Amino acid sequence: MTPLVAVLIIAAVVCAFTWITSLITREHSWVDRLWSIVPVVYVWVFAAFAGLADARLNVMAVLVTLWGARLTFNFARKGGYSGTEDYRWPILRARMSRLQFEVFNLLFIVLYQNAILVLITLPALTAFEHRDTPFGVLDALVTALFLALLVGETVADQQQWNFQEAKKAGGPDFRPRFVQSGLWRLSRHPNFFFEQAQWWALFLFGAIAAGSLLQWTVLGAVLLTGLFIGSTIFTESITKSKYPEYADYQATTSPIIPWFPKRADKAVTA
Image (spheres, rainbow, N blue to C red):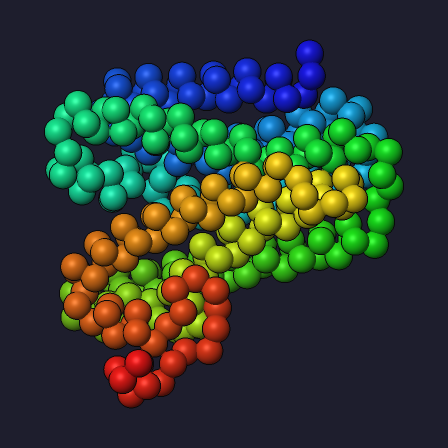
């Protein structure tokens, strides 16, 4: 058995589990609950098939484990493992018939999202296939980049958490009604930026091992970025409907990539 076949078998089991549990429980956040876990398993499969003897694969596995541990902690403290469903799914269910949503659940939530979770880890396949390429300076630089991005996402999520806790304590009159300070002054979704960037960094490990950026395994990072773009548009439409002042925030603040905010008067005339 090859490591890719092993990963695909695990992914098939995960798909079956998330689909069946969604049908039984009538809620659809089971993929979310495994999102930070299964990529860790997949990368370690490749490292294990290399006998844990390849430095690059071992580093990739450790980095993805750190990513998974941080994301699991953040998801857990927000109640993600206590039966709380992603707030977007009830809204989407209300816009679809029961049959339409169940088809969406199977094809998008279960199959497509699980496929992305496999694809984003496949730079480890490239690294596995080029195990003869030694771990070098470029790998060390990408390791440092990944860790920096991990710190950035940790800071962004902590700032969001601190804001939400202050908002709960402040009651319905708390202002502002959504976080706009810290990294959130430079980007409307800094956590999304750092999350995606980490998987682009992971792709670089495979590219370094192969000696070329022209690797098909970039597909995972590309599809993940596309998923986040769609999710961001949907999420912001919900936020804007709740908070009309969000439009002003959109006018002055970069959507994803952290950048200097625009002046309000310039944003109005732009």
